[in-house]
Image (cartoon, rainbow, N blue to C red; front, side, top):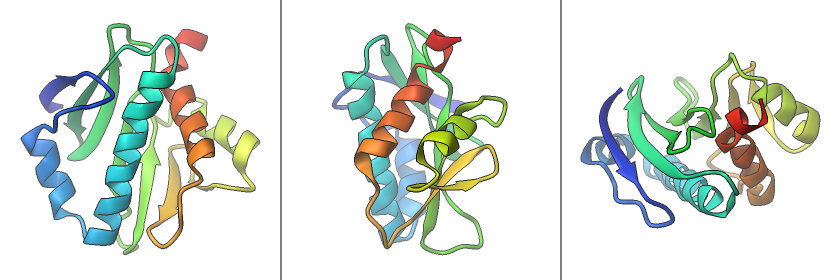
Length: 144
C-alpha cells in the first residue's frame, strides 16, 4: 500500500507509480484495464453514497478504495498471470461480492473463485453489468 493519492472523480489524475504499472501491460490488456479504471470512476461519480476514491497500488496492482466515506471495499485490476490477453477485476475474497455477481450474472460474466471477474481483451466488456458490479463493491459497507 504505497503511493496513495486521493482522486476526485470523474476526472482523476494518475499517480506516477500506478501509471507505470499500466504502462507495463501489453497494449490490448492495458487499453481494457484503463477502460475499467474509467468505469470505476464514472460509476463512483454516479452512485449515491460513494465519496472520494483513492487510487493506489496493492500487491503491485492498481487498486481503488473509497474514502470519505469508506462506503466500499477495495477493487483491484490486473492481467492474469500465465494467460496472455486476459485480465481481471478483483475484490476481497472475504466479501460476498463474487457470490452475488455469480447469482446475478453467471450467464454473462466469467469468474475466478470467489475473488475475481475475468475478461478477455478480445471481448467487449458488458458495461451495464460491470457498472452494477462496481456499484455493489463501491457501496459494500453501506449495505452491511
